[in-house]
Image (cartoon, rainbow, N blue to C red):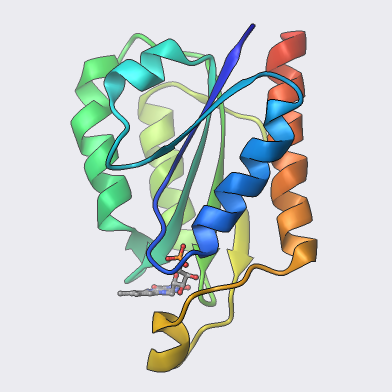
Length: 161
Ligand SMILES: Cc1cc2nc3c(=O)[nH]c(=O)nc-3n(C[C@H](O)[C@H](O)[C@H](O)COP(=O)(O)O)c2cc1C
C-alpha cells in the first residue's frame, strides 16, 4: 500500500490541528505517517510515496524548524524522489504566501509534483497576545485540510498522480 508522509511544525497548535485533520482523512485511503519536523529526515522521505508539508509562516518565511528539516534532508534525497506528488499547508496570521513560495521552491528543487495550490489557513492573529495564544482552527478550515488529506491518500492509493 502506498504511504503518505505528513511533516509539520506547530508552535501554538494551529498547524498541528491542520496536519492531524489531513492525516485522519488520508488514513482511510492509504498508509499515513504523521511526523513532527524535528523527528523527520531523509529516510522518511525515501520511504514514502507522496508528501504533505505543513507549517506556520514566521517573519514572512517558513518556520525555522521546517527549514531545518529541509536543510537536513535536502541533499540526502536529491535525485531520489523526482516526480513524487506533494501538497502543502500553511497556517498564517494574515498572509502565508511567502512561506508557501519558499516550500514550493524547495519542492521544485526536489522535482516534486504539486497536486494542488498551497492551502493557506489564516488564524487572523495580529496582536502579540493573539499570536502567542493556542490556536483553534475553525471547522470549515479543518474540512479543507481533510479534503486535502483524502485527495492525497486516494490519489496515491489509485496511482493517479
Ligand atoms: C515569530 C512569529 C512571526 C510570525 N510572522 C508571521 C508572518 O510573517 N505572516 C503571518 O501571516 N503570520 C505570522 N505569524 C503568525 C503565525 O503564522 C500564526 O500565529 C500561526 O497561526 C501559527 O501557527 P501554529 O499555531 O501552528 O504555530 C508569526 C508568528 C510568530 C510567532
